[in-house]
Image (cartoon, rainbow, N blue to C red):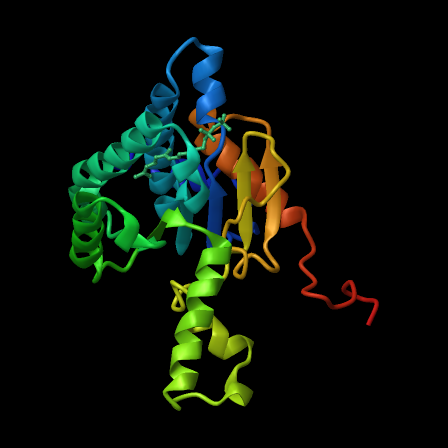
Length: 253
Ligand code: FPP
């Protein structure tokens, strides 16, 4: 699966460069990429799948701990049925075809979103890939399918409310730490860096709770044209940012 030797990629970064623990990517621009070429939107998604593979490989070789990829949002059901069905098939096929490569490369796969609303065959493969890769120790690939940031928060609130109603939690016990434990992936660190190719300056319901302090890098390149060099550039940009988490700049306190 690894197409670019790990050393070549890491050598593109300064020695003192910090690799973000968790990178989130809003994979945007597949439709525009296809339209610019007179192709169908689905052709754009097919090309976007290839980019996703490249980026998974690159993040694994750079030592990124978690990569979250936004593949299908709860809002995406509003697209024309052929596009929605095409995306469901594409995600299912990609996971079937990539399972062995994920295992071979020590990638742990997790899926986030309301999977009970997805086609049965897709639910099955999501569960299967999660189970087959559960013991892997390398990159964690978090694939967001039928995901919405607000939906995730509502689901957490509902589960907490049920626990309160059952008398297992007192309202006064609810704080940020407890709440975060009811999100879809409580074991993952929050994203440090969110990359948005396609040029749009918005977060589009992506990991709303978890990106509270993430650094956002918006790039004009459309997702099918996104290369490992764009990933390297985004990590370099991340390294220019001073992460303050609400504190004063270093030296001012
Ligand atoms: C947004 O581009 C992209 C999507 C809604 C789909 C992204 C999904 C993939 C690339 C499949 C990846 C699969 C795996 C298993 C990793 P857009 O259509 O909104 O583009 P536009 O803004 O140019 O219209």
